[in-house]
Length: 118
Image 1 (spheres, rainbow, N blue to C red):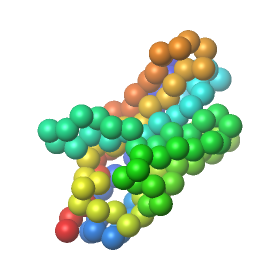
Image 2: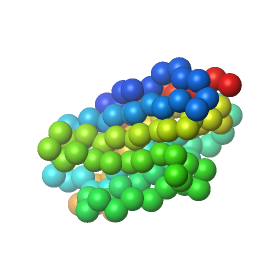
Image 3: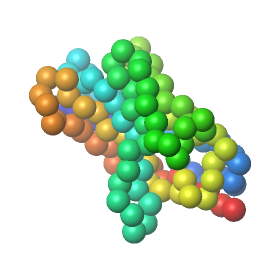
Image 4: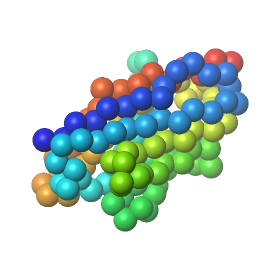
């Protein structure tokens, strides 16, 4: 089993920054790529950023150049550095861990709220 705990959300003014953290515990050896998703009120959950076990990254067009995903394997933690925040970035942000042992198996955190005021 794998457990994920996100933190770092909060209220920030437009143009500000936040760094989200996702601490992974449990069967860490089974985890491959990690993702950050977000879900705004009334909208579907969307993929924001991905980082593979090798460190390759990918971003949604809406956050490219503003957000950076990284991972510290020694601390079992994945980060999402969010700069130049916009009101449309307001959402609950979720961390997702993908199993490298079983296709389609993944684990989710409980989410952390990010609110950007104009």
